[in-house]
Image 1 (spheres, rainbow, N blue to C red):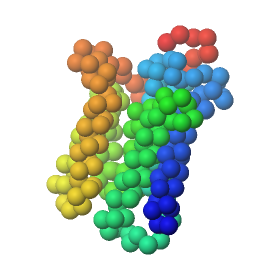
Image 2 (tube, rainbow, N blue to C red):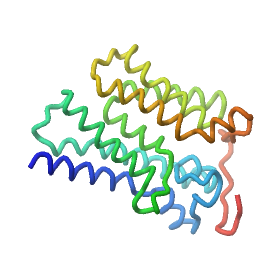
Image 3 (cartoon, helix red, strand yellow):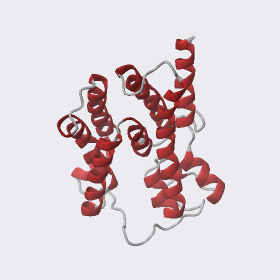
Length: 219
């Protein structure tokens, strides 16, 4: 019975992560599929770029909540003791399922986003202190360079170092996972890295909101 419950909760976490916030909100309020504009990514950054902050910020918050909510499903497994290795390991499984759901959403032809916002919510639910430090890294990099991809990669690369050397984590699964996060973020940002090397990566404006597009506009 416990294994059946755990498997069911992992499935629920995947379905939760599969909710395509950017796609559904864009289509409902603007009749726009953000995947057909801008970077073609179904995430908060592209939504802000294409439809503006009033649409993009709710998408961002919902994507964060997907990751955070998926991790909280561990509360339904009553025999797992909080802060123990089995508890944390299962949190990592649930968060990973939600992250995969966001990247490959069953409700949006498996064409999702890169998962940074969902990953943020996921890690806030597992290791909030280290995650908040890395969020600070993201904000500093964004203010300094105004490039979201660079800021995201910097925060992801900082995570294992913050976790191990600042907060002295001794949880093997969490330490390994933090390294995998850094590698995965780099892999999913391959195209961004190429544009960064050629100085072609888009910057975001911190002063004025993005221009909204109509369904007929081409990006």
